[in-house]
Image (tube, rainbow, N blue to C red; front, side, top):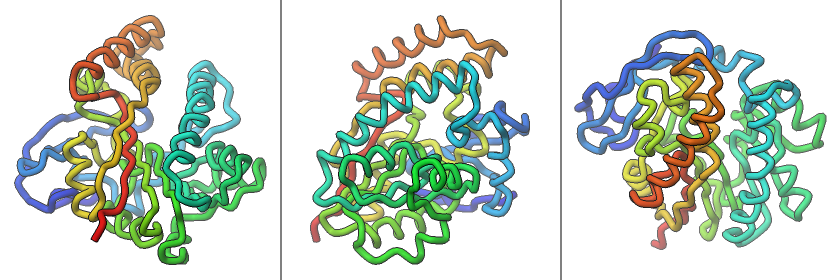
Length: 296
């Protein structure tokens, strides 16, 4: 375990306890989320180090990496994912100044495979050996380990995407700096993360599935994402809701809170979360941030 002495976003060292919760998905271990008194960023501390975190993904039930497992929850996940892929492609196409796309944390590769079929020159980064192998075998994609990032050419990519990935990255600022280096000056960075200011986050509290301790190291709000962007000379061009996430996250949260997959209550709470967000600063369960480099 490693203990952070400084906020991972603003670098200040004055924290307050925010939440105590558990790894409901796998180990049942307890973790503490702290809140930075300066910028409001919420983060797990202490947390597993880079050499330890891999074991927290080693489960056949980790659905973002398991394309073959068949059960009701995985079917729902794949249904939502397939509905989202076309919307993601449309967003990328709308903002791309060119055709070179890098997806960091690409999982089993469905998104970049769709983009490749629609004219993009794609590469993927995926730390997990199993999903990386699936992307190679099933879709014949160029998907590499994380170490490959150091080999990429400066200003190489027109679009870089991280779909629910940034919250997992151990060295946050180092990863952001590398992304800026390999994105061309007119390029676009698209980041999707859960929103800890959403209605469902407040309603479920420690049982909110998007805390996903300890795999999610950081818990972003719109304000803390803006601070992170500014630190790396980026501006937020658009903020886009991921409305379907409210239903999926509510379903998992119901299971953690009650021990049952309460589909009816999850649907009700998904609608409640989205209705709240329409009235309150677009605080949907998950948000997509479209970022551009600041003009010098």
